[in-house]
Every structure is written in structure tokens, then in C-alpha cells.
Image (cartoon, rainbow, N blue to C red; front, side, top):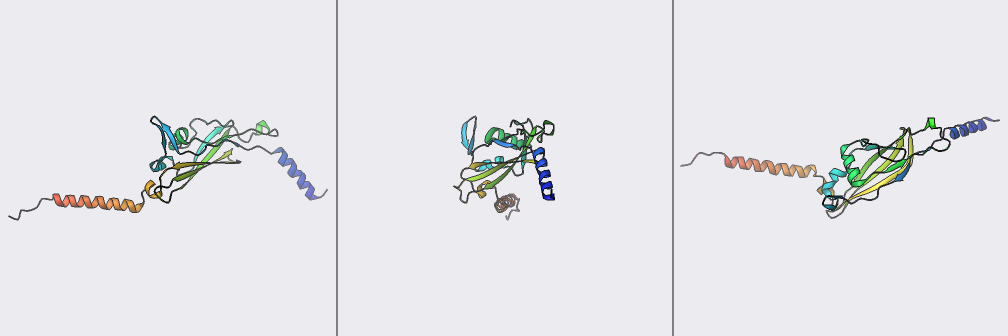
Amino acid sequence: MDMKRIFYIIFLVFSTNFAFSQPTLQFCPGTVDGFTDENGFRNFNCFDVANVLFMQPVTYQLDNNGNLIANSISTPQAELVMTTQTGFAEFVYEPSEGDDEDEDQCFGNITVTITDQIQYGATPTDDAIITRTFTAVCNGNVVSPDICFQDIIFENCNRFIAIPTLSSWAVVITLLLSTIFATVWYLKPRKSLL
């Protein structure tokens, strides 16, 4: 028996005995363009971007059946947004028949990571869209091949409306300081010319 065949047999033995299943996507939330509160349904507008956009990755944990584990969402902002407005992806894990229960790769928890990317409209009447990406991993090393993408739409929203730029703040501060200076100068007591 040559070395190639020996390595191939070793590969087959290890890949068969140590094969394990991965988390799979069970539910991916659809496109969202607003939310319902005590006043009824309201579309997201430009001023909602700051509340809904996650500036850094967010994580949460699910059990093997895709149920959210209490208090596992990494930020209060994400917990509020995901549970009341946008929803969240659910991944499940079912060990394959070849998996040994003692060597279950997920240990009961699936960690989901969310990253956001925003594309602003070019004009004030264009919509801005956050593309939210959900990826799952269990035990830190078993990555799900499934990825969930969700679009969140904000009507009539361009970059200049949503986030004040440094130059617009500079104009506001300059006008404010000019107004304060003019008011102080005008109210300053003066000597009478008579």
C-alpha cells in the first residue's frame, strides 16, 4: 500500500468520525420600513437612523432550537430595536447522526453576530437603506454557511439630513457665537454723549 492511499484512508477516518453539523438558518426577518407603536404604524424616517443603525457589531445567543436566550443581546439599543421594531434571525442546530452527544460541537448555544452597512440616498427624496447581516457560530469555531440579510428602509433620507456634518455644525456654532457677541455688545452700558 502506497503512502497516498494511507493518507487518504486516514483522511476518510478522521473526516467521518469528526464530522459535525453546523447551525442552519431557520428564520430571516424580511425588509422593514417602519414599526407599530401606541399611535399605529409609522414609517421609519431619517431621524430614526441614529436609533436603528448599529455602529459596531452586535451579538446575541440562541439555544439549539433557535430560541433567544434571555439577556444575551449585547447592547440595550440592539435589544430594544430587535425586539420591538426589526426582529432578528434564528439559527438552529441539530447534531447529525454521526455526532457523539459528548462531543456536541455547539454545547447548547449559538452566537449570532450582526453587522450593519448603510447606503444613504443621493437626494433628499431618496430612501436610505441599512443592510443588516446576521452570521452564526457555535462554540467559537463552527461557522454556519447560512447568512441572513435584512434591509431596513428610511424614507426621504440622505446623508446631510441624517447626520449633521462638521461643516454644518461649524456654521451653526459660528452663527450662535456671532449672535451672542452682538447681543453682549449691544447690551453693554455706554457713556452718554450729553
